[in-house]
Length: 598
Image (cartoon, rainbow, N blue to C red):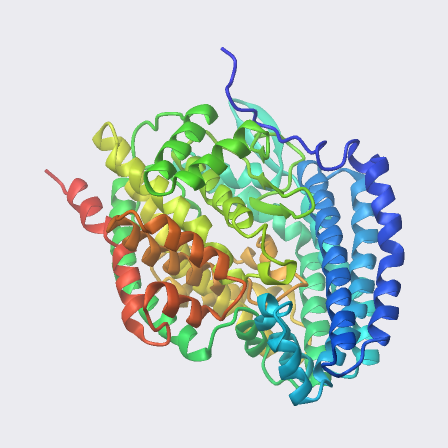
C-alpha cells in the first residue's frame, strides 16, 4: 500500500543538485563580494537625521537584510546536506566556505553596529521616529546597546575572523567525530553498527539486560572519542572565555541571559518553580522502576516501555494524527503542517549515516522550512514531528516581517514547537484505546517532564560549573565525567541508580559556538508553552489570533514584555511558573492511579 507522506525530504526546490548545485555555487560567489560592499556602504553613513542621511541608512539596512537572508538560506541548505548524510565530504567543504562568508558578514555588521553606537542621541531619536525604521526600532536599539559593550570594530572583526578556525572549527571537528561514530548492536546473533541517533533510540528496548548491554557499548563508543571531545569542549570554552575577558565581561551566563532577552530574576523564578516538581518526579521514577521489575531506574532505563506491547505507529498515521489534533486549536497551524508534509519538507527516515537529533531550519529566501528527525514508529515520534512542525509554523507567520524583526531568541523559539507537541501528546492520552496505551503515553509525558525539570537543569549545572573551572585551565576527561555525574545527581535528586558520565560528550548542545547555555531556554520555552496551552484549553474564537500575535512578536520585545502583553503575567515572579509546572505534572496522579497494585 502506497504511503501518503514521504519519509524523505526534497531539497531540490531550494538548490537543485545538492552539493554541486550550480545555483548554490552562484549565490556563494555573489555572497563572497557582498560583505565588502556592505562595508563600503556603511562607511558612507552620516550620523545625523537629515532626510538624505536617513535615506542612506534605510538603503544600507535593506542591503544588510538581503545579505542575511541569502546567508541563512545557504547555511540552512548546507546544514541539511550534512544532516542527511554525515559522510557528504562536499557538504563539509561547503560548510567551511559558508562559515567564512558568515564571518565576513559579521565583520561588516560590527562596523554597522559601531555606527549605531556612535549616533548622537538627539539624531538617534530622530532616526527611530522615522516610520521606515519603526518596525525594527527594538532591534536597532538593542544592537546599539550591545555595541556599547564590545571592543573596537577592528578588534571585534579580528575575533570573528579568528573564530572561523577557532572555536567554530572545534565545533565542526566535534560534528565530524560524532558523524563517523558507530555503536555496535547485537540482536538475534547478528552484529549491526548503528549511528549515534539510531543507537540512542535502542534504549527503548523492553529487555533490561539488553538495555544494560547496549549502554555498555554506548559508553565504550563515547569513551573511545572522549579525548577528542574533551579537547573540543576545552578549546571552545577557553576561546569564549578569552573573548569575554578582553571585553570585560565577568559572567558567561550574563551574556546568555541577554541573548535570551530575560533577566536573572526570571531565570531564578523559573528554576525555583522547577524545583517543586523534582520530588514528584522521583516518585514517578520509583513507580516506573517497580513496573519494570527493577530496584531503581538507571539513566538508560528512562526510555524503557512499561507496557508489555507497544502498538507500532506508521508515519502516515502519526502525520495524520498531528494534523488532525493541531486543527482543534489552530486551523492555520494544521494547514501549514499538511503543506509541509505534502511538499516533502520533512526528513524522517530511519537509516544509517544520518546525524542524531532533530531540528527545523528556516529558508528565508524560499519562504520554506525543513524538518529533520528520525521517526521510530512510536507516538513519541508523533510528538517530535509536531514539535518540529511547530517551529516551521513560527517561521511562516513571520515571513512578512522585516528580516531583523524575525530574530526570536532560543527560549521563545520553543513556544510554537512545544505548544504543538503538547497538543498532540495530550490528545493521544485522551484518545488512548487501552490501559496499556494510556500508560505508555502518560509515561512519555512524565519522561518529557523529567527531561525539562531534571535533565536540562543537569546540563545547566554542568555548563555553569564547567566555565567556572575552565577559568583555571583545561579539564581532563575524568574531571568532566565527575562533573557531569555530580550535576546529574544534583538535578535528579539522587533519584537514579546510575548516571551517564560521558553525557557531556554525547550532547552536541555543549559544543555550539553560537551561544553558551543552550539548555535553560528549552525549559523556559516549555513552560511558556504550557501557559499558552492552558489558555488554549479555555477556548474562544480569539485564541488563534492572539496566538499568532504572540508568535509574531517573539522577535520584537523582551521575553518578559512578550508574556506581559500577550499573557498578562509577570515572569520575574514565581506564580506563573508554578502554575505551568503543575499543569505539566498533572499526568502524575493518573499514572500512579493506573499503576496501583490491585
